[in-house]
Image: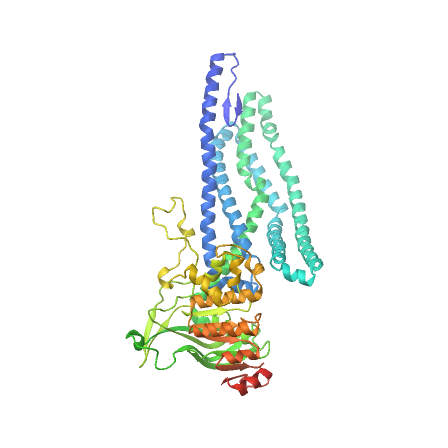
Amino acid sequence: MRMVFGVWFCFPEDKDQEQFTKQLVYYLASFAGGIPVFVLRDYAKDTLSLRWRSWMTSYYMDRYLKNRTFYKIQSQSIIDNPDQRIVDDLSSFTGTALAFSLTLFNATVDLISFSNILYGIYPPLFLVLLAYSLGGTAISVFLGRGLVTLNFLQEKKEADFRYGLVRVRENAESIAFYDGEENEMQLLLQRFRSAFDNLSKLLISSRNLDFFTNGYRYLIQILPAAVVAPMYFSGKIEFGVINQSVSAFNHILGDFSLIVYQFQAISAFSAVIDRLGEFDDLLTSSETRSVSESMEEICREFCTINDPSMSNGSGALTRASKLLMIEQLTLLTPSKATLIRDLSLEVCEKDHLLITGPSGSGKTSLLRAIAGLWSFGRGTIRFYDKNTRDALPSLSADVASPETTSVYDPKHEYRKLNKRNSRGVFFLPQKPYMVLGTLRQQLLYPTWSNDPAPMSDSDIPADSLSFLMRTKDMDSRPTKPTTEDLVQVLEDVRLGYILSRFDLDSTYEWSSVLSVGEQQRLAFARLLLSRPNLVLLDESTSALDEANEAHLYKLIEAAGITYVSIGHRRTLFEHHRSVLYISPVEPTSALLNWRFEPINNESAYNLSKQ
């Protein structure tokens, strides 16, 4: 009798051809029936792994992007390479966890099947097997105790090296201008050398473990025969029983020795679990902090204004509506040094504000605090938004309807909103963000996504995953601009000429294709399409000439957008009505380090000289 592909195939000792033919037919039938089973089993396992990974990827990406956790991780360098943890570690976790689960299940079934056979042959052999497997497991754990840490570090160092190469690609032009190839080579080699040294230690530990594992694996070939041989020589058992005991012994020992045989894979899997556990703990702590807004010392409030004059079809408000109010705001650095002391001001419609002052005085930190990206300090920042029929969309990631509590004012109705972002507030940084996508998507970002047309239930594939199909609240956004609108806004910001080089649906690495000045004008095109109530500009025209700068400011003013700018150019005073000058804090002085005043020719001259 011989096993072929898991089927016992018999050769009759009496040379019975009919019996041989029957056995051959049985084998072929088993073979034909087994192939679909094995193929479908592997397909089901891989499909389950893929769906599990898809769900976990969606789950972790949602938590990573929620409450600006991604920004906190990057700005505070809390953990390394969150992208690798989402892509590689999740993939490894789901695939390996499922494979280990099936292996454990098969081992359990195998153990139950062969234990009675071995115990019935010779009970002491079962005890020898148990002692041998436990001893081997203990020795494997001892010899491989450092593998988990080494695998954890290897994941980190490989990701650091890959990130270094990505930075070279993203900053290729700057590196070329600096002629910094040699420096980059040294930095990359340093990172690779760190990964190489750690991998060398990992290989040495694996080698030492392999010495034991191979000896452990080959010794079991003769151990059961050596234990039952005395019974054979004394005539208590037949020779075939020895073969049975060896087969049963090997099956059961393989089941008991999973840790020994799979120790290197288990150690790598443990490193993946450690990295994902660290990432999950960070996301959980971020969610816990975001639930209790009262713990933030800088309080940000968002209110709508229901004005009676707007609902009855009358014209503009009798007086300018407030858009932003700052009360007793003190900004601190992470080391608790004071940047701005007790700032109070309000910004009304068309009351364009310029913020200026020396570098390092806290101007950008103030805009970050207004945008909710800076939490070091105390005070209140309150936003107001007119609740009219043409109200602008929420730029928040949270599209759920907020709970409101009404507080009535004699002239206006105020409603305090429990949400992170004010409606109609836009932020333009000095270096615009270029999304991965087409020119059309650049213009529509972030107010509209370039989603395909909605599908009916009959059009959705049966195997589609609901958690991978995310949609925005269409009712919360204004009408999506047409192609003609997009072309016109490019002409308005003096970028119409790029349509001769690219069409709206072409895809490029736009941060490399467009100059910084072109990217800044593209950002203003986004602004004009979104038409928020208030925009915060952080030196958003620094790469433009004065003529283009003046043109863009006139465009957004004509669009009815109120703006708060940070800048140093003297020409900026022409486009603003008031100025906030911030000076560095004197550690020994209790005086305010800011001054707020309307802009006139004299103040513009004096402030620009400081």
